Image (tube, rainbow, N blue to C red):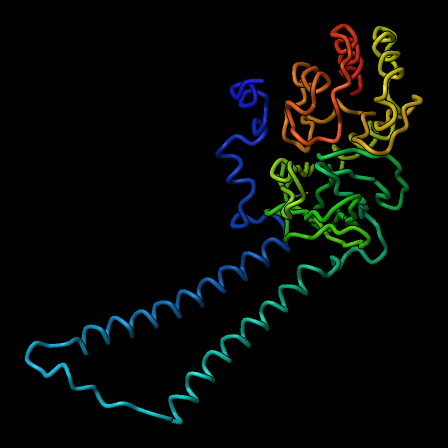
Length: 346
Ligand code: CUA
């Protein structure tokens, strides 16, 4: 495949330049914990700027005031000061006070960011999702919402509800890894949280407004780390309920694509992928039960359309070098049948 093809293949299509900058800036927070973090950042920047101005000011003043003058004898050193107690004490105490102040405000921010929202004591309105970091995509296992049990799995595009005044809808993520260390980061919704094999970390998401919030794996995890993107789709409780209802259903069975379905089920696809309601029960690769309800594939890095799906099935390595899915050398007819089948999985 030529380099031009890769450029057109859809990488980063999802993240048009301007949007990307806005959607991943910590300086446009859209949730309480992101706000705490940006406030701390501004405070630290202000303290650092003040120190910079004072130090550079004294330096420039000294350079100007005590510069060598042609008239004076430059071989003579200025008076040297040794062991001045007031100076020693001043430059030990001042930085200690500044550092102690920054430690206190950082500790307060950590507390604010990690604490569970006050309104979730009884679990009402809370969504619980287990996030599994994988090379190189995100698996979301929906567990519970507003007291109801859920048991479906999806990938990369995390749908969550947005609360209202008096009706909070926080999301509690339990983060696990299936392979190496990753880090879950949606800058506008909060801080990074490491995703570590053998450890379960938790993170609360509480967006204030509906919308799409982009994120990124923030810990180097292998070849496709930079393309391990994610998206949080925050929607009103009503829209979220509709999305839930569709996700909870088994896959549609359209008789018009019976050939494609048979082709899919007869190939190795079923060893890794799951399509609920069919014998395909693999738990290793993205769940395809509602594939077409997602706008992207491959860790949000490639647009989910018929052309890209066919190119993906033809040779995943060409689109995403290092991907754990190999090319299976299927005939063109079989590829097209399988794509037609996948397109019905809404
Ligand atoms: Cu996963 Cu970087």
